[in-house]
Image (cartoon, rainbow, N blue to C red; front, side, top):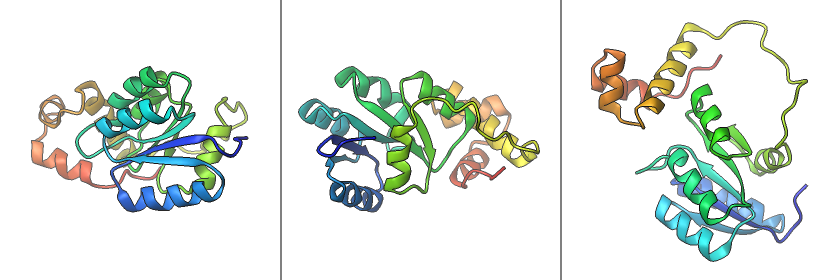
Length: 179
């Protein structure tokens, strides 16, 4: 469990989410700093040396996955939890490979975030789904995988998938399909 007075960096372009999460964590004794983009995150990390950070996967002008290695280069002992409203297996795997200790799907609250920091080890007893994912979920996962392979480039991803760029953009604006 975390101890109070630890520094926590929140990196998210959603100002209301940052405000709510920051206030909740501050009330629990954390020293919280908030960044809304990659440059600000790196500057605040260098200045405050946080022990923990939450990192939004989809920042307005960049990717949390691209920021993650840079953030860990600045503060190597920082534990990072990636948060996203656009979850996929591909991005979860990449986040962990790049050094995140956990990956959560939004919406989340302060309890979810703190529990994610506490659960940095794997759980062999996690329940396995009884049924396979829906075809819509498999499609979403495949699009996310191809998008990741093309470094977030929408045009290159659309070409690789054989679909029109605007069609792909419409699909990406939707929330991920539930299992």
